[in-house]
Image (cartoon, rainbow, N blue to C red; front, side, top):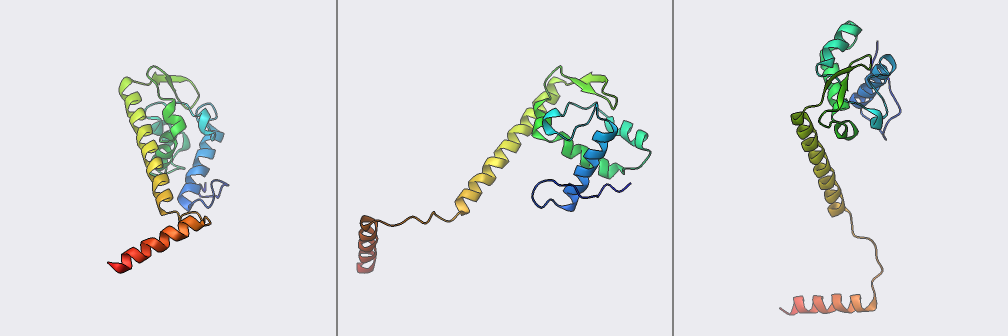
Length: 155
């Protein structure tokens, strides 16, 4: 089974992202009651579900690949927003398998806050590096610039 088959994703996804997307699509196809390719439909997974997946797929996905895929799947903001205390977790068959704890909800909220802060920092950095808009200078702007130049030259 080749999990590195390309999928149409965001603009110019890396090979790693393509492999992860392909594996998520595979898991969603094999276990539609548990996994979803649609981010808003993602529900909390059973704790330790990686063991069940490894057993069910009999090594078709390496533990390292599975760790990456589940990390990507579970760090998604939509998934994290569904982690609320008492919400049921689901196994591969879509059956309830435990519930989200207070600590897990707290961790999910912290992760969401971190994601939001990183996103805002990237946006601020992009705005700071963006060249100023090409605005047309008025006569007053030109006079002020000339006055400023004269004052700096006369010092």
